[in-house]
Amino acid sequence: MEPSGTPEPPRVRLERRYRFSASHLYRRPEWSEEENRARFGRCANLPGHGHNYRLYVQVAGPIDPTTGFVVDLAALDTWVTQAVLDRLDHQHLNCALPEFGEGGLVPSSENLVLWIRRALAEGEPAGVEVVGLRLEEDEDLAAEWPPR
Image 1: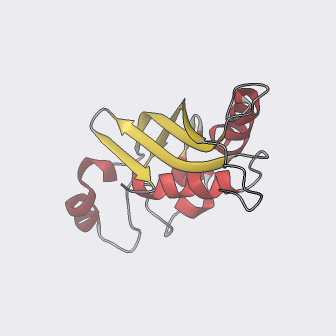
Image 2 (image 1 turned 120 degrees about the vertical axis):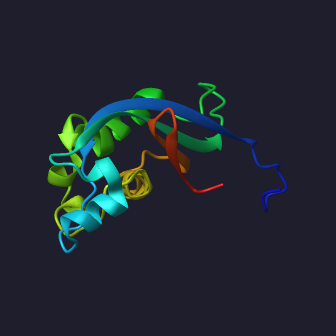
């Protein structure tokens, strides 16, 4: 209950799927070629490899009684597109994002989902609370925030 004695409106979680294509390379410059191949396998092959990623963004909040929505989907789409998709789609992640440049973070799904979380933390539309992200690299590999 809220302090006024009225019950809090129920919260609902909404999930929206987005897609983007990007390439990346797993490589540590301080390691030898042999060490990179031993640790990262074919993912260390120059110049890198690509994926058709699927990003699931989960937001939560009360349902607006006028619209019946947790969030305006057009506003959500614009926000995710500007914060994430425009920066990642058809990019080589090691080159497009300074965090994943030479000597930086390895652009694994785990590191990329955290990068997406930080990117989405900037400029959230009013009333939007991101409560979960799932980034699927392919049918067999995905990273989630928060981890379950």
